[in-house]
Image 1 (cartoon, rainbow, N blue to C red):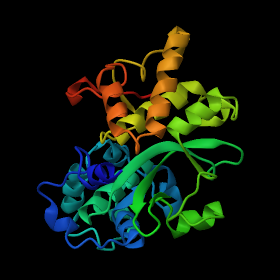
Image 2: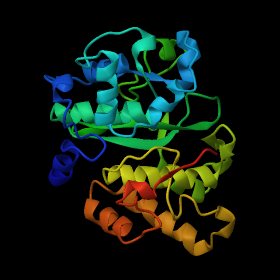
Image 3: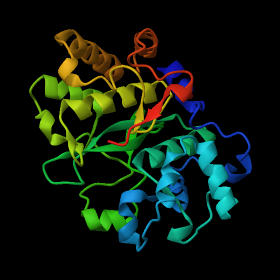
Image 4: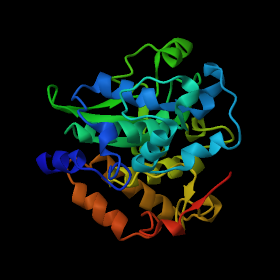
Length: 288
């Protein structure tokens, strides 16, 4: 476990900060402050109207910048010199839940706190449904365990959603990671048709988030619309029971990642249908 924590304290390809270090100096080891910094710089695309913004087609392209470094460069061009600065909503970067989680993980790592972005499903956006979502998971040294944090939920969203929990400590009652969601649906504990977003539901969406979460645990947190050859793009009507078994095994390894990171790593690295291509030019964008 100690080695695993060390691993998640180190940056990955999406959280590494190269030329924009001056924007993330002196990040405190306080998760509340880190979340406030993320909310200083990012504004969720699908909540934009709630903040009084009408987004142009150009602004809707902002979430397509994958890495935190790219986002910091963009923010710097908007006039930000540090993530602690407060700006008006129209001067924040348009983003999605994955971006809030990746940015929060990046700032945690800058502060020396083990952290990772997790993909799964939240129960607090629509009644009786589990909606596609990402959260931050960070190691709480005092409690000696991983805690989930929804870095997206600012005061406006908390009030609108009437949350019954603290966004800085989200329990499994409210957010289910994709590997557990897959396994619980396969075991008949949950109905897979309740998992998804917009027009996409069921195992078709469960498998996408499972693959995203497994790769995020391996420190390659991709975006929901990123597609590559393999299980993320293979139509499920073409799947055999063996394909489902591959996802079952992937889920179990992901759930057990803290006890055996190497097993998950080897399983994904030896399966080109799961792992993200090393050359990102092989990753395409799905428009649904």
